Length: 68
Image (cartoon, rainbow, N blue to C red; front, top):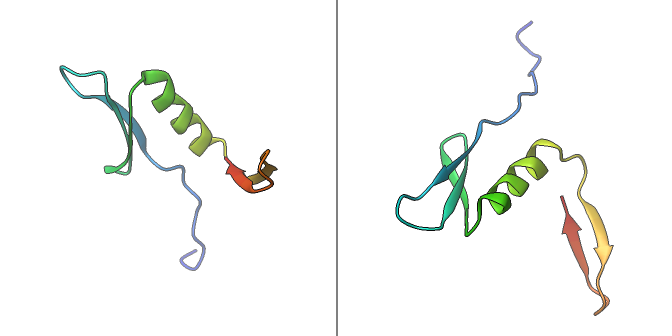
């Protein structure tokens, strides 16, 4: 059926910058983030793959932040 779009998971890749401590996170070959640690890159990937609706959480200052 042509009119129906299938949901697909994005292609999320993690790569290490040689000779440094930095890690990159790419979605469909487009750079999303550069972080200092592999665990941070994996946390971003996990959050993107397991996200549903962003949750809002109140901070001490009374403002809100979105949680993936």
